[in-house]
Image (cartoon, rainbow, N blue to C red; front, side, top):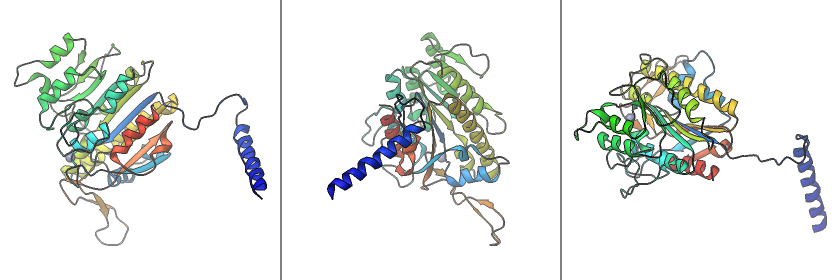
Length: 362
Ligand SMILES: [Zn+2]
């Protein structure tokens, strides 16, 4: 009896193998279902859960970028200290794989600095970049570069950016934290003297490395006033980082989805979601063409407790309603595209995202 089972198993495997080989004309090519990607692009919609994504889908004339992803999952966002996270603990969980206390940047809950994926991949020789529409020193982008017990210590966080030898490209706002400092240091001048190329707009950037573009003293203007800043900055970052032989890691944040939702401003929110959607489309176009880039889109938390209802109970209208001016604990989406993307389905901890990327990149 056992023999028959064994024989059956062997012939079944043979059928499977011959089937899978039949799709490849050259039988000597080895086939790997999940080759290691060369590049990793992590995109974070600050304050973006499924209601915000659906707000973009509802108000978009064309199919959105979110509908281009073959793999979707969901992530739990609670922090070590709170059932509802802030962007510091949320950003740190995504950047480092450690749940920490609200307010803390790049540290675990015992205040011990922990390396971010940007730092780990930089040590492997990959080029790295951070793009945001807030201060570059704001909680989410800071979580990838700085270590601080308090997210509001912006000038100390700017100093960490200046001292970092792990980051090759920075684009965002927050110039004042580099130039109008209590210690009197002009960090931009210091960084330029140490080899950084500094600009305050996205145009005429000739260098390919050590580029810092701080386009605003504070946060960038909101959409639509800032035009195509985020998609343009992201395309520029891809162009510059893609010159790296050992691949690159890029974090892009749609920072102001959160600001709009804190204000319970649905027009601002929809504009920010379309801007982020437009940026994701540009990134997916790059990744599709490249064929060797893993793209993950997720969020640190939901903001606004957003939902859509028909106030008349007729199920025919979808009015936006916010239930809070703060954050909520909703699961956030995880969208994945490219080599290794199949690992991002199901319900996961926010800390699993980076752990999984690092496993794929081993
Ligand atoms: Zn927020």
